[in-house]
Amino acid sequence: MRRTWTLALVLLILLVAVLVTGCTSTSQVLEPGTFYRRDIGIEVNGVQYQGVVTVPHAKSYDFVFQPKGDVDLLLIKNCHRTFSAEKLSPGWFGKNKFPYSYTPFPEEDDRVCPVRVEVYESAKEGKHSWAFLDFENPKYALQYILTCDGNQRIINGVGVCQAKSDTAQWVRFNEPIRFAPALPEKCSKPEKKDGFFEIKTSVGECLYHFDTRDGRKGRLTVIGFQGVLVREPQ
Image (tube, rainbow, N blue to C red):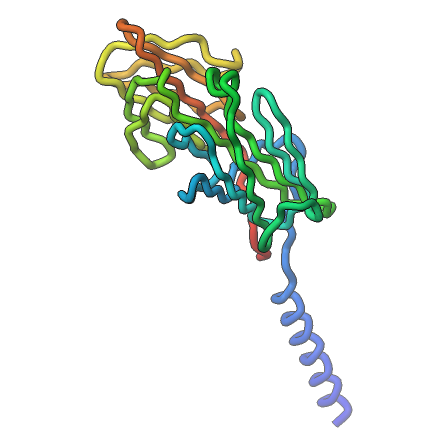
């Protein structure tokens, strides 16, 4: 009888251990120096986007940023300004939503000046998040076809592509064009193929400018990520 009770106790301990293990969440810790996929939810003038986007040109923009995780600090930056807000700052509404009205000055609107969003969690394993927004501009009127990360679309002068680093992305034009040197210099150079250009995705942001013989211009930002953050416990 005593042996039977001992065996039952051992089985009970094993069962509890299995249940506890099955209910335990695994936290993903950020790796220093890793460039992660941009994935903040973005609403611009009532239209929903995700992570990276080029939005139609307008005089002003109403943003709503919706990060995936908890938010302790939010930064909104471009070539001219830096805006910051903590979780208890005025302006928060709902859970993890922050509105921001953006009216660019002519000097911002007249140059390459994308908006970058950074969200930070204060926890040790904080799962930070990011977004990148660029804007169509009448000065960039060259249309082209962008094939990026499994999707193909027509670009109205200003495009952005986010894909895993070291993958191949493609740009197609209907007429001869010339590329300016990529910025920064570490970025890969477009390679001319049969009727299109292939760009090997470098880590981070790479800006490509190009134009036609009659002076029409276009630009493309290619963002290469190294890792993807798990946003829900496993």
